[in-house]
Amino acid sequence: MRFLSDYMIKDHKEFEKVFNDFGDNIGSSHLMEYFLKFKWNLTAHLAVEEKIIFINYNPETEEDAGMMEKILEEHRELISLMDDIEDRLNDGKDVDISHLKRMLIEHRNFEDEVLYPMLDNKIDENTKKQIITKLENQ
Image (cartoon, rainbow, N blue to C red; front, side, top):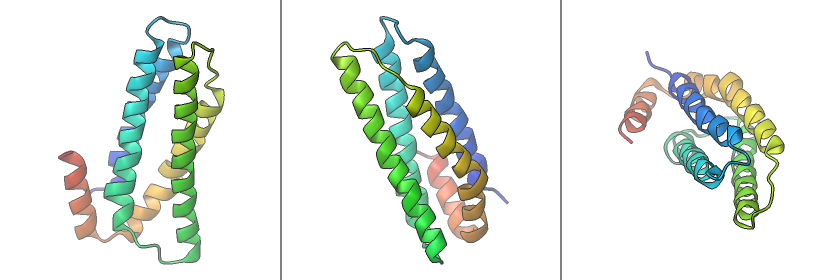
């Protein structure tokens, strides 16, 4: 049996490396390049979650529906934060990524520890297999 959480935790680790590259280059002349790579990776990750995984899950309870809405709201907030950072970089202003970093850590931990184990338990095996196949072939 394969788990969505295994795949997504691996994906979290990969874009975390890209974020760290960006963070390590604050003040570098290549900062925008690192930022755009991070933004592209995170945006792609969020799209995968929303367009491949979440679309295949129908919340069974109000609590589950609330959790899914919370995740989607956090996605919108992360995108907004990245847009703000990009605007600051384009304007030649300093950037503070501490709020983004904090939010990414909290979001990742919630997904890794709560959301993905729950989805692994509630999505039927055939659907999980189809999702994982799509994830591996993207």
